[in-house]
Image 1: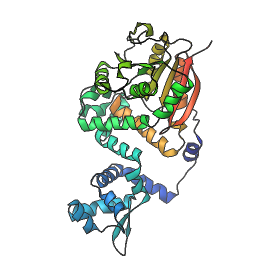
Image 2: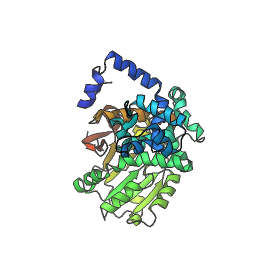
Image 3: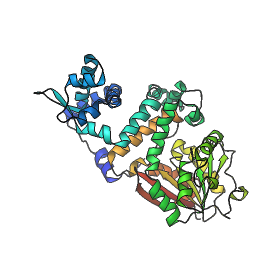
Length: 378
């Protein structure tokens, strides 16, 4: 595979960054990673980092005990671990603790908070089955939630807190890109009819009908997701211009609906097929199969808009780190065979389906790109 990395990534991934001592510490940090995560999460959940941040000159251990009602033993363990993790600092003369820069980001960076909730509620227990998932090509870590072949079939049945963290993660990354995506779809390309493939709760569909008063949207998703979508949009502005079509997109015998057969569509042609954070839910072979079925309902003027966080196109390296880690959520929890793709892999799928990339819009929101795709010309 030939990587075409954006500059910040190339600098980080092609040259050694650490001294030998720094590398040794990093290795130990990895070895103790599970407890590092839990200490940071508990410090956040219990409000200890917030207390320290909001204090004028830091806090003593006893003050933290008094505020949290935790034992001196518990607080001592947490503070000593947090100190070595690097999320707090200590003044050795006054024995008062203050917040480090890393601790500040734990509190204030919304992406970090979303990632912590997602990993604790959705992924943490499932990571234990990561090796089996890699070996078997199945989401073995999903079994502690239920018997479903993928997380999507069971999404509506997951515990409430797990659903909250799953949708919080999913929506956080897509929502930040919506304003710019809407401009690309409706201002640059004048879309009036749109299929929202894998539309989940209908959040993007509502954005579309709110932004453009003429567009009609058909959400294509699993039947149970369509029911969830209908409940979510009921009574909201523009909901009458949103319809649903139940389809199992993993079943190659189930085809996209012919646009002319949908009674809710007054437009004579299908302008756009929208796929946001959708194709990363499938293997490359499955992506090709989905795109082939999408091509069946396309005219020469129809465009597919594929919005993905391609890890090799990230402006800043921490984003690429998060995305490659997210790939392993797909391995252990979601479906066992998909990932966060790079540009080369996704483009290869598009071309194999007889389509071609017409244009790429980069750096939307939290690092999304939109690939504008048309039927390939001979």
